[in-house]
Image 1 (cartoon, rainbow, N blue to C red):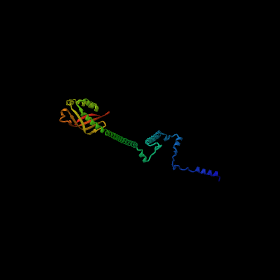
Image 2 (image 1 turned 120 degrees about the horizontal axis):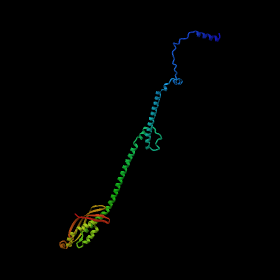
Image 3 (image 1 turned 60 degrees about the vertical axis):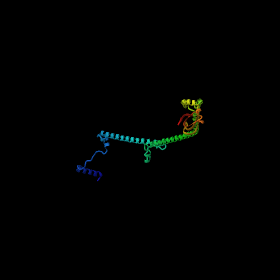
Image 4 (image 1 turned 45 degrees about the vertical axis):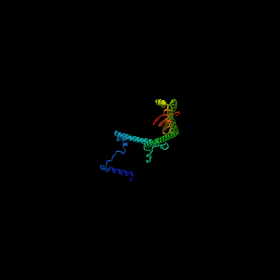
Length: 280
Protein backbone atom coordinates (compact mmCIF):
# COMPACT_ATOMS: atom_id res chain seq x y z
CA UNK A 1 0.00 0.00 0.00
CA UNK A 2 1.26 3.44 -0.93
CA UNK A 3 1.89 6.13 1.61
CA UNK A 4 -0.92 8.21 0.29
CA UNK A 5 -3.29 5.30 0.81
CA UNK A 6 -2.09 4.98 4.37
CA UNK A 7 -2.67 8.64 5.05
CA UNK A 8 -6.04 8.51 3.50
CA UNK A 9 -7.01 5.53 5.53
CA UNK A 10 -5.91 7.15 8.71
CA UNK A 11 -7.84 10.29 7.95
CA UNK A 12 -10.97 8.35 7.31
CA UNK A 13 -10.74 6.55 10.53
CA UNK A 14 -10.25 9.87 12.31
CA UNK A 15 -13.29 11.32 10.68
CA UNK A 16 -15.40 8.41 11.52
CA UNK A 17 -14.27 8.17 15.12
CA UNK A 18 -15.96 10.05 17.97
CA UNK A 19 -14.14 13.16 19.17
CA UNK A 20 -12.60 12.86 22.62
CA UNK A 21 -14.37 14.28 25.67
CA UNK A 22 -12.74 17.57 26.65
CA UNK A 23 -14.69 18.13 29.81
CA UNK A 24 -11.99 16.38 31.87
CA UNK A 25 -9.13 18.65 30.62
CA UNK A 26 -8.39 21.38 33.21
CA UNK A 27 -8.49 24.97 32.16
CA UNK A 28 -5.13 26.71 32.08
CA UNK A 29 -4.34 30.38 32.91
CA UNK A 30 -3.67 32.14 29.67
CA UNK A 31 -2.36 35.31 31.41
CA UNK A 32 1.19 36.07 30.37
CA UNK A 33 3.94 35.79 32.96
CA UNK A 34 5.30 39.21 31.86
CA UNK A 35 2.73 41.85 32.82
CA UNK A 36 4.82 44.68 31.47
CA UNK A 37 5.03 43.09 28.06
CA UNK A 38 1.29 42.36 28.04
CA UNK A 39 0.52 45.92 29.22
CA UNK A 40 2.59 47.29 26.40
CA UNK A 41 0.95 44.93 23.95
CA UNK A 42 -2.61 45.33 25.19
CA UNK A 43 -4.85 48.15 26.29
CA UNK A 44 -5.44 47.00 29.93
CA UNK A 45 -3.77 49.37 32.58
CA UNK A 46 -0.85 48.03 34.69
CA UNK A 47 -0.79 48.41 38.50
CA UNK A 48 2.68 50.06 38.14
CA UNK A 49 1.05 52.90 36.20
CA UNK A 50 -1.26 53.92 39.09
CA UNK A 51 -0.93 57.26 40.93
CA UNK A 52 -0.61 55.47 44.29
CA UNK A 53 2.45 53.59 43.12
CA UNK A 54 4.11 56.73 41.81
CA UNK A 55 3.36 58.63 45.03
CA UNK A 56 4.80 55.79 47.17
CA UNK A 57 7.87 55.66 44.99
CA UNK A 58 8.31 59.42 45.34
CA UNK A 59 7.98 59.23 49.12
CA UNK A 60 10.57 56.47 49.31
CA UNK A 61 13.02 58.51 47.25
CA UNK A 62 12.47 61.53 49.53
CA UNK A 63 13.10 59.41 52.64
CA UNK A 64 16.28 57.96 51.18
CA UNK A 65 17.47 61.43 50.15
CA UNK A 66 16.76 62.82 53.65
CA UNK A 67 18.57 59.89 55.28
CA UNK A 68 21.56 60.43 53.00
CA UNK A 69 21.65 64.14 53.88
CA UNK A 70 21.46 63.36 57.61
CA UNK A 71 24.34 60.88 57.30
CA UNK A 72 26.33 63.45 55.35
CA UNK A 73 25.68 66.13 58.01
CA UNK A 74 26.80 63.79 60.80
CA UNK A 75 29.97 62.90 58.93
CA UNK A 76 30.74 66.59 58.31
CA UNK A 77 30.16 67.45 61.98
CA UNK A 78 32.39 64.56 63.07
CA UNK A 79 35.08 65.69 60.64
CA UNK A 80 34.89 69.28 61.97
CA UNK A 81 35.26 68.07 65.57
CA UNK A 82 38.26 65.98 64.66
CA UNK A 83 39.89 68.71 62.61
CA UNK A 84 39.39 71.22 65.46
CA UNK A 85 41.64 69.22 67.76
CA UNK A 86 44.65 69.28 65.51
CA UNK A 87 45.48 72.98 66.15
CA UNK A 88 47.26 71.98 69.34
CA UNK A 89 49.69 69.79 67.43
CA UNK A 90 52.50 70.78 65.13
CA UNK A 91 51.96 70.96 61.40
CA UNK A 92 54.30 68.02 60.89
CA UNK A 93 52.35 65.80 63.24
CA UNK A 94 48.88 66.83 61.97
CA UNK A 95 47.26 64.21 59.70
CA UNK A 96 45.98 65.10 56.26
CA UNK A 97 42.65 63.41 56.84
CA UNK A 98 40.55 62.75 59.89
CA UNK A 99 40.85 59.09 60.78
CA UNK A 100 39.75 57.08 63.74
CA UNK A 101 42.58 57.08 66.26
CA UNK A 102 43.46 54.62 68.94
CA UNK A 103 42.30 55.19 72.54
CA UNK A 104 45.72 56.61 73.46
CA UNK A 105 45.43 59.27 70.74
CA UNK A 106 41.90 60.09 71.84
CA UNK A 107 43.25 60.75 75.33
CA UNK A 108 45.77 63.23 73.90
CA UNK A 109 43.01 65.00 71.99
CA UNK A 110 40.70 65.39 74.98
CA UNK A 111 39.20 68.92 74.94
CA UNK A 112 40.71 71.29 77.50
CA UNK A 113 43.97 69.39 78.08
CA UNK A 114 46.04 71.91 76.13
CA UNK A 115 44.43 74.92 77.80
CA UNK A 116 44.89 73.35 81.24
CA UNK A 117 48.59 72.77 80.51
CA UNK A 118 49.03 76.34 79.32
CA UNK A 119 47.33 77.67 82.45
CA UNK A 120 49.49 75.55 84.73
CA UNK A 121 52.65 76.63 82.95
CA UNK A 122 51.53 80.26 83.09
CA UNK A 123 50.83 79.99 86.82
CA UNK A 124 54.22 78.39 87.42
CA UNK A 125 55.87 81.15 85.40
CA UNK A 126 54.10 83.82 87.45
CA UNK A 127 55.14 82.13 90.69
CA UNK A 128 58.73 81.83 89.47
CA UNK A 129 58.80 85.50 88.50
CA UNK A 130 57.31 86.49 91.85
CA UNK A 131 59.88 84.42 93.74
CA UNK A 132 62.67 85.87 91.62
CA UNK A 133 61.35 89.36 92.29
CA UNK A 134 61.28 88.70 96.03
CA UNK A 135 64.84 87.40 95.98
CA UNK A 136 66.00 90.39 93.94
CA UNK A 137 64.27 92.76 96.36
CA UNK A 138 65.75 91.02 99.38
CA UNK A 139 69.18 91.00 97.79
CA UNK A 140 69.02 94.69 96.97
CA UNK A 141 67.60 95.47 100.39
CA UNK A 142 70.35 93.51 102.09
CA UNK A 143 72.94 95.19 99.90
CA UNK A 144 71.44 98.59 100.66
CA UNK A 145 71.41 97.82 104.37
CA UNK A 146 75.01 96.72 104.19
CA UNK A 147 75.93 99.96 102.46
CA UNK A 148 73.94 101.94 105.01
CA UNK A 149 75.59 100.07 107.85
CA UNK A 150 79.01 100.81 106.40
CA UNK A 151 78.09 104.45 106.01
CA UNK A 152 76.74 104.64 109.58
CA UNK A 153 79.86 102.97 110.92
CA UNK A 154 81.90 105.60 109.17
CA UNK A 155 79.72 108.42 110.53
CA UNK A 156 79.52 107.14 114.10
CA UNK A 157 82.94 108.30 115.38
CA UNK A 158 82.57 111.73 113.83
CA UNK A 159 79.08 112.15 115.28
CA UNK A 160 80.24 111.30 118.81
CA UNK A 161 83.19 113.67 118.58
CA UNK A 162 81.13 116.56 117.18
CA UNK A 163 78.38 116.07 119.76
CA UNK A 164 80.95 116.52 122.53
CA UNK A 165 82.45 119.60 120.90
CA UNK A 166 79.06 121.22 120.30
CA UNK A 167 77.92 120.58 123.89
CA UNK A 168 81.06 122.09 125.41
CA UNK A 169 80.66 125.10 123.11
CA UNK A 170 77.22 125.82 124.54
CA UNK A 171 78.40 125.43 128.15
CA UNK A 172 81.70 127.30 127.81
CA UNK A 173 81.31 131.07 127.78
CA UNK A 174 82.46 134.45 129.04
CA UNK A 175 79.60 136.64 130.20
CA UNK A 176 81.47 139.69 129.01
CA UNK A 177 81.28 138.52 125.37
CA UNK A 178 78.07 136.64 124.53
CA UNK A 179 78.29 137.89 120.96
CA UNK A 180 81.20 135.56 120.23
CA UNK A 181 79.21 132.69 121.73
CA UNK A 182 76.19 133.47 119.56
CA UNK A 183 78.37 133.55 116.47
CA UNK A 184 79.82 130.16 117.31
CA UNK A 185 76.35 128.72 118.05
CA UNK A 186 75.11 129.91 114.66
CA UNK A 187 78.01 128.16 112.92
CA UNK A 188 77.54 124.75 114.53
CA UNK A 189 73.72 124.58 114.71
CA UNK A 190 70.76 124.34 112.41
CA UNK A 191 69.09 127.72 111.82
CA UNK A 192 66.04 126.76 113.87
CA UNK A 193 68.01 125.55 116.89
CA UNK A 194 70.38 128.55 116.85
CA UNK A 195 67.47 130.97 116.85
CA UNK A 196 65.55 129.19 119.63
CA UNK A 197 68.59 128.67 121.88
CA UNK A 198 69.83 132.25 121.66
CA UNK A 199 66.38 133.72 122.26
CA UNK A 200 65.64 131.33 125.12
CA UNK A 201 68.85 132.08 127.05
CA UNK A 202 68.62 135.88 127.10
CA UNK A 203 67.13 136.14 130.57
CA UNK A 204 69.68 133.73 132.07
CA UNK A 205 72.50 135.65 130.43
CA UNK A 206 71.50 138.86 132.23
CA UNK A 207 72.10 137.27 135.65
CA UNK A 208 75.33 135.68 134.46
CA UNK A 209 76.58 139.01 133.14
CA UNK A 210 75.80 140.75 136.45
CA UNK A 211 77.83 138.09 138.29
CA UNK A 212 80.66 138.40 135.76
CA UNK A 213 80.69 134.63 135.48
CA UNK A 214 82.99 132.59 133.29
CA UNK A 215 82.18 128.93 132.55
CA UNK A 216 84.25 126.08 131.17
CA UNK A 217 82.97 122.58 130.29
CA UNK A 218 84.52 119.28 129.27
CA UNK A 219 83.13 115.88 128.25
CA UNK A 220 83.72 113.06 130.68
CA UNK A 221 82.07 110.23 128.71
CA UNK A 222 79.93 109.75 125.62
CA UNK A 223 77.71 107.05 124.21
CA UNK A 224 75.65 106.66 121.05
CA UNK A 225 71.92 106.26 121.56
CA UNK A 226 71.13 105.98 117.86
CA UNK A 227 72.76 106.89 114.60
CA UNK A 228 71.68 106.80 110.97
CA UNK A 229 72.70 108.46 107.76
CA UNK A 230 70.55 111.51 108.60
CA UNK A 231 70.48 111.77 112.39
CA UNK A 232 72.58 110.93 115.43
CA UNK A 233 71.60 111.02 119.11
CA UNK A 234 74.46 111.01 121.62
CA UNK A 235 74.38 110.91 125.42
CA UNK A 236 77.13 112.93 127.16
CA UNK A 237 78.37 113.29 130.72
CA UNK A 238 79.81 116.79 131.17
CA UNK A 239 81.69 118.49 133.98
CA UNK A 240 81.36 122.28 134.13
CA UNK A 241 83.15 124.82 136.38
CA UNK A 242 81.77 128.37 136.81
CA UNK A 243 83.97 131.05 138.32
CA UNK A 244 82.88 134.50 139.51
CA UNK A 245 84.40 137.25 141.70
CA UNK A 246 81.82 136.63 144.41
CA UNK A 247 82.70 132.93 144.74
CA UNK A 248 86.44 133.06 144.14
CA UNK A 249 87.42 132.75 147.80
CA UNK A 250 85.12 129.80 148.47
CA UNK A 251 85.60 128.09 145.10
CA UNK A 252 88.92 129.20 143.68
CA UNK A 253 88.67 126.55 140.91
CA UNK A 254 85.08 127.46 140.22
CA UNK A 255 81.73 126.10 141.25
CA UNK A 256 81.54 122.51 139.92
CA UNK A 257 78.51 121.27 137.99
CA UNK A 258 77.96 117.79 136.59
CA UNK A 259 75.38 117.34 133.88
CA UNK A 260 74.07 114.69 131.56
CA UNK A 261 72.87 116.01 128.26
CA UNK A 262 71.30 114.47 125.18
CA UNK A 263 72.57 115.98 121.96
CA UNK A 264 70.80 115.47 118.62
CA UNK A 265 72.72 116.03 115.42
CA UNK A 266 71.19 116.40 111.97
CA UNK A 267 73.06 115.64 108.77
CA UNK A 268 73.17 118.66 106.50
CA UNK A 269 74.88 119.22 103.14
CA UNK A 270 77.89 120.69 104.98
CA UNK A 271 78.02 117.98 107.68
CA UNK A 272 76.57 117.32 111.14
CA UNK A 273 74.74 120.24 112.75
CA UNK A 274 73.39 120.66 116.29
CA UNK A 275 69.61 120.20 116.16
CA UNK A 276 68.69 119.73 119.84
CA UNK A 277 70.24 119.98 123.30
CA UNK A 278 68.50 118.65 126.42
CA UNK A 279 69.75 118.38 130.00
CA UNK A 280 68.49 115.09 131.48
